[in-house]
Length: 242
Image (cartoon, rainbow, N blue to C red; front, side, top):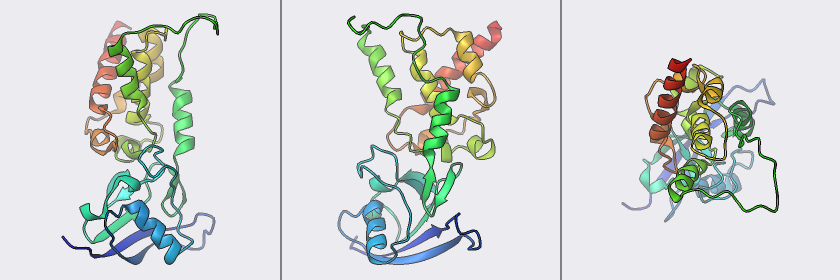
């Protein structure tokens, strides 16, 4: 397929100007070889509309800043090639998160709150000794922790989640994945009942309705379906023992 003329239908709204209603504005752009949506948005802002707001940092799918709804699907602009999309491209900010302007949303405040609610740190009664060797663990355990730690907090799984779009207090797959990370960490000394207090509710693991949109939209392929199943099974047992 040859290079095309692309039409971008981009959501525009500045919350700091309340008298101007949200609207969709169209931009025409000539496609280039290897063009990503990140490159396209940069060209639009540099050549057509310098007021366009969107977020980016790394351009390599590592920072998670450029998450947005691309033709209705939450994903990263920097990892989306225009050649894989139709000539008409719709760009809308991620739902659930606070809108900062146009395609820019505040995922940082949401993820900070989830870190506090899920108590995302190693709980231990051991005194810290900076001179002692690191705790050893098996390669399999280290890989399970690493798999969960790959989350880049882009918010795509949250925006694609039916429950998160209805219930603002639901921790979503990202929050459950974070709990799973500490459940498998042998350095964390919490028992199943302490974890149940954190995640064993309808705002936690039992709020998931199992549609698995989170697994479908994760741009880096974290096995969220397995993480959700693991935590649900553990918390179901913990709830039964209560």
